[in-house]
Image (tube, rainbow, N blue to C red; front, side):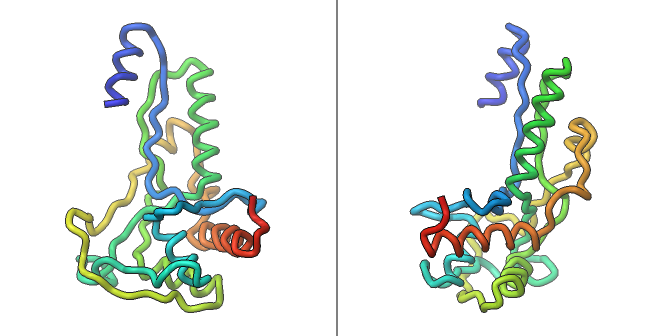
Length: 184
């Protein structure tokens, strides 16, 4: 609905816009000062890292029977700093006279829940406490962006996007600092 309203304003008043549709935003800023934490958390990485730290219950992995390589759901994770860079590129596009845009922001690479858990275990040096539960109704087996249009239009280079390891490492640093009262 919001995108339709923006398109109407563009047609009626010439207000150009950029709708940037995030896939799974994750990670923390490079200085480790700003990270992801909510009282009611639903995102995999904060739930997983808090479980490692013992500040939340064990991670619940919903579904082990998806038609994926390891049976767990696959998602596209993109670092928050890469999303920030995409915002700057979108503003440059508009300020340079570019037309209104609606783009999916992701890496085009999917990682399963088990892959994310394994990555977290390598980075933290600790096991991820977890339990398995049935699939949640409506969860797709795989949800990965096709970033080709975003990359071309905004002149972004996937080689500069952070890897899953970098995403997890930045989030881990922030979560550790938060636990010790050092995060902002």
